[in-house]
Image 1 (cartoon, helix red, strand yellow):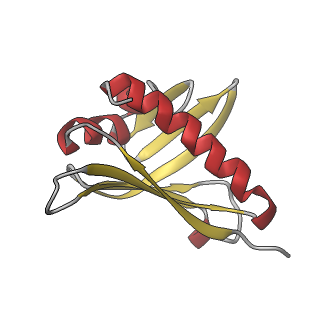
Image 2 (cartoon, one colour):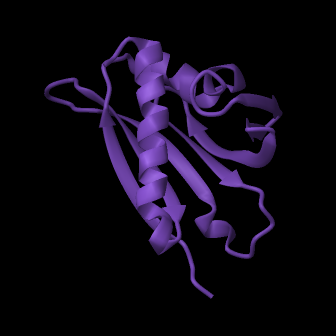
Length: 130
């Protein structure tokens, strides 16, 4: 059985880490750019796209720094069913980037990257960073 492989993409973004964290860590923030609708009960988040719901647990987070979600899709490959969005600040230039880590099957990586690019473009519009 083919297993998923990890990929990472970095997106420069002109916004404060504090503001970005609100958009990546809360249901109300995530539903503005990541999914059509997002609900949360405790650490469990429900992401809805085109009427289809996927559940994920917020397994780790640090204020103004990162969030890490694990998909609850029932697969055996639980370690490779997460995505992480990390806020990276360059120590010298103070430039801010979002580093996205995700998993996809080898033949779906480009498609997954394009999806992230589209979603992050929506986030950039929201925070006024084109």
